[in-house]
Amino acid sequence: MSSAAALLCKSAAAMAESVRAGTVSASALVQASLARIEATDGRVNAFTERTQRRALQRAAAIDLQLAAGDGAHALRSLPLLGVPFAVKNLFDIEGVSTLAGSKIERESPPAKADAVLVQRLEAAGAVLVGALNMDEYAYGFTTENSHVGPARNPHDL
Image 1: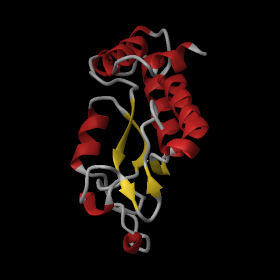
Image 2: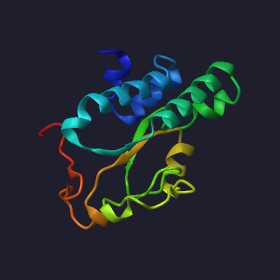
Image 3: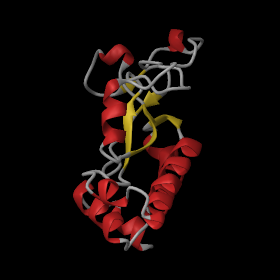
């Protein structure tokens, strides 16, 4: 297991500190996260959309800024620097249709902008890797979605 993959089992603070300290790049952390999603999501069914291109571009931009020193001091102060995250597909993600767990929303146009929650997490340095499966219109608590199947606990399928 790479050091980036091992960091995914740590806290967000530990991940960000490793990026700040230069022991792992934001890109390596995001790539490890995307690899884990690819390897496990067939069983877990957590993601309805992966934002791979966006995530890799954002992580590369963070790494470039840190390496160049261009605003690196301000960047290093971000509490979630390089930390991968995902949001339920109830929150708008620019360029992605907001499904809210519903079949009838599949034809909806993509969101024109990110939800405030996504904006704030990214402003704190986090890197969006995708949108998550959920109960239809958030009406439930088991994530037993009748359209795309249940999202399972990765620790106990």
